[in-house]
View 1 (cartoon, helix red, strand yellow):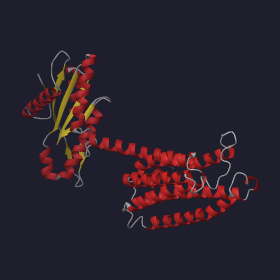
View 2 (view 1 turned 90 degrees about the horizontal axis):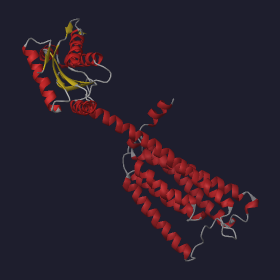
View 3 (view 1 turned 180 degrees about the horizontal axis):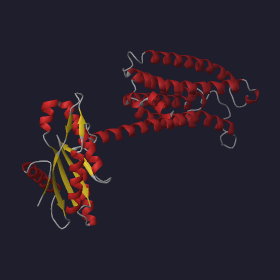
View 4 (view 1 turned 135 degrees about the horizontal axis):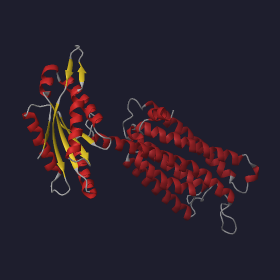
Length: 381
């Protein structure tokens, strides 16, 4: 169920602009319904006369309803254009500006220096920079900040009232009225939940995408083995570990015999199947903590930490026999049998060699095996 939901939602980072704007507007509509619900409750509760400025509440109620209608209209617009012209970043600018500027207005009605204003002002840009085009967020943030400073200045000058809907925000002793403190918390909670949820989901998807990209950068796409760069990195790592533990290290170079003839006779599709079958055989032959990578073309590199020459020779022979036992059935009914030549080099911690030396020695041993008739193992001196 969870996986199906994730597949349906997709990666928010890959959504088009209209869909991102649509999500932001849906969240905003939920906020507006909450604001309107609290306002209607306050207007119909006679016991709040000392807590609410009723004339101002009725005055601003009209604007609240107009803003809700505007949000619904923008939701319809962004929904309609999602599939056809949804890639224009203008929708993100529009949604961010609308969200930021009108939130300043909502904040003004209950007090600009309040908890909900602070949560939106700090939290929304942080998540916005992850989810929405950064210039759209920056434009909305700066515009909202300028509006907030402007409103704060003219309220300080007494040109307009501070928190016109609210009365008695603070008690005679200077402490905040518990009822208004509760109201501020109610207004802030939806923003906190949305910010946390969206940030968590987007960052999770971001991490999954980075892991997938990292895996692809280390993996050969055809065989699923480590690619050349990664298997050499693993060889370097195992060499360092073996030096610390004073253990031997062996390297085996594997080359499929007559692979060019297979490609020439049956085509590259069959050649790819041969490489995949050989890769499976290699994985099945080695230990769990050994490393196998595609070195290039039909060549594979096997890293065997902790095995000396005798032990590596035995495992190399098992690799050779496993590959030789592969029988690939063709659509024509014919069967292809495989064989491989192997070259092996071993490293003792008392020696001074590099990773390149080990690979070159195994490569030299491999060519010796080929010159001696193929389908055999050559061991570097």
